Image: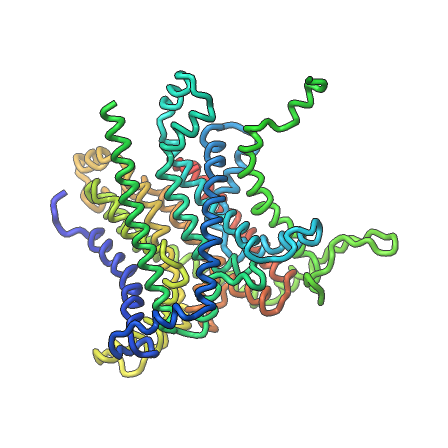
Length: 274
Length: 301
């Protein structure tokens, strides 16, 4: 394609500017000396110091990281099984129902998921006495549920593209199904598993609405904490927190993109030479 | 051994039990809850913990089943709720249109870029959506405020003398929604556009079709599945959006997600909140079904 003027290319960079400028502003003002977020009064890192001294936020950060780690891990394990069902068994009873239960959480509004899960937990608590009360456990269950849907979509698309003759070769050479799964299938879908885990981790870390419904006393997550302070207005401490989140996400995203690329390159190089 | 050979058919086998785990999980924690929403939507509010009346009660040796459609009647009688549903659908619709207008050219540009650059460009679009959604909405609060960056800049340039009220308006909600949901529009559109066969465009060009004609007669119709998938990914969640109207909207922004939240948390009226949720699910059933079909067709699931 010749490098001539193109409307779509212009729109692309306008769109990118639209997406990045507000975040850039947020980052710049996190180093502002003044409490007034919109007036520049000189460079300062004092909001970061205040952020790290805020015990409430720090506890919430730790709690949210734990929940995100556990939700992403559980969701990915379940999603591997779910993808195997979806991709390898084209016809089974309830397939339509199952695939519906995977796509629906992707788009279902958070308020509905949050409310319905809370009502389930309350009813279960009344009927079978579990969960006794709401807290980290119920948030974990809720997050695992919607992360499971996203993870299944990511992993099953990779599983579908995979060359099945590799598995057949392994079975022909005498490996049993379980060994074939762990030594052939799993390494091939590993990049998708990593992306699914990271996606789930960020989704869990980001959720405010569902967690607000299903959490209980003493289990305030970071987004709930941020939301309640943001509702009252703009504060530089939140800007500092935002900057750290943006930095962490960018690092992980670029890092995992690089790793996936290298892994894919290596797999295709191996396939080419063998 | 095998005293009951037929029994074996009903006892789950090891491998299949394991495979059933995700099925059961979603059944219990995603599907089953909707039954409780339905159940509590026909209960009455009560000063109790939990704050609703029981559906089935054993009272003095008599089984009482109490179903009340009072909540639904209440919702339909009050124009506020109908207004909220209508507003939500309207705002979700226009947000989808704006996302499509901005997102389509972006997806097109990525799909037309050299193969080795495409992943990087796509990453550039998706990266913001991986940082906190809440923080991205919050970023606009600082920009749109009366003494915010945009107003200050405009006043400094002398375009305006008085700050324009932008925060706490529907305008701000649109900005926030388009900003937050744009990547969800670009991704399925790109996935669709990148699969297009270039020879079709060449054939059209050979037959004398110009740039614009080729786009509207070949590319756009072929990308219809991507358009629908992207639009549904924006439209459906935006109908029930809560965070954006709460932070950026004002009193004029009556959206159903916000109303539901207020009924639940502020008024502690769980039955009315459930009825609101149930009606919302019914409204969204058709779009969700459409999304599901496209997702299946495009090889997603």
